[in-house]
Amino acid sequence: MSLIVAKFGGTSVADYPAMSRCADIILANPDTRVVVVSASSGVTNLLVELTQEQTTDERSMQLIKKIAHIQYQILDALGSPQDVAARLDTVLSRISSLSEELSRNRNKATMDELLAQGEQCSSALFAAVLREKGEAASAFDVRQVMRTDSHFGRAEPQIELVADLAGKHLAPLLSSQRIVTQGFIGADENGSTTTLGRGGSDYSAALLAEALKATAVEIWTDVAGIYTTDPRLAPNASPIAEISFNEAAEMATFGAKVLHPATILPAVRQKIQVFVGSSREPERGGTWIRHQVEDEPVYRAVAVRRDQTLLNLHSLQMLHAQGFLAETFATLARHKISVDLITTSEVNVSLTLDKTGSDSAGNGLLSEALLQELSQHCRVRVEDDLALVAIVGNKIASTPGVCRRVFEVLEPHNVRMICQGASPHNLCVLVSESEAAQVVSALHKNLFEQ
Image (cartoon, rainbow, N blue to C red):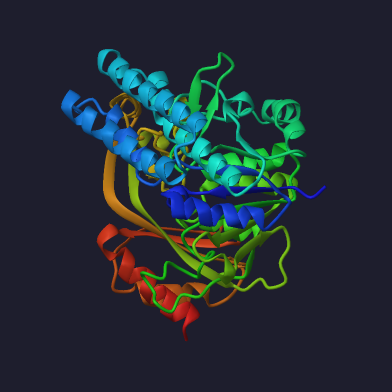
């Protein structure tokens, strides 16, 4: 049997009309058996503010009222079915008690459980919308199958356990009903709630698709697929009908916000095709991400990732020495920091760190403990307010003339780092945040519009 896992983001489940449109998309395809939802738009941000140490008791009450208002408006439009109303009351009461607990004892485990409550609400409501339309559907607690480690805020899924548990607890339900479940969250071996980091709902959908051996993952958002760049930066940006896994992985990694960077990994492992489309305008189609595609142009897209940090490490120990890089990377690994781009000279190493690696509560990457540990064997300088611009395509490293076309655009700009050659699919430059929009627009014009 063909099986599709569909994921709907926060704007797609923001209110009753949005949920109703998404339900129609699901009902139009009998193969869509698993639905993964984010929290309703705005709810996760409100929950994140609840976790902040500076949030006062009075502000906490205001935040909880706002969350309740968003969810009860959807409930009211449904006619307030008793079972769903009781579920919402329970979740909102839990939010209140977790907020109080966090004010007394700040710990990441409690933060994760608090942040997970938004998806509990939206999944219960969305299943009710499907039932209202006459479809057999129920909300399923993904924590029964999404097994992770205990790294709260940025937990790592245990792939084999997820597959085993999904086969036992989720797969048997699919023949008789549509299952609505939560993205972004999981549970460790002790049953404690964990989160996969901000934007982790796409990843959740792909992991479930992998575990259930699905044929496709559909990512429904507020844009009609993937474009050659952000249309807000280049009005002539055009939609892309299909791209390869390699290209999509580069685009997701380097800033295409319609995909979480980790989404592609499970799809690549099982060669599951991924569709990206607009839940507001499904008739416009979207982008298919496939293992093989017919067209592989040199230039596919220009992506930008803002809010980048450049870490400069200087040490004379590097000069004709061994072990410095190993020690540096071991230190970063102990602090769960994934290095993005790297350039080296005889006595300097420059690394870029992407703040999308921050945990679910928005806590940053560079802790004082990490900086102090690095400072023991090198001089550390941190630069912020940078943006990473990536030209994504095919055979970039082996195609003559690429650098000329890119660098003639960059001539008026101060480029802090250039990385090219490690992958045939990208050429990356690090520029000032304030110049990023201008750089993207100029590159798109030169590479795609002439």
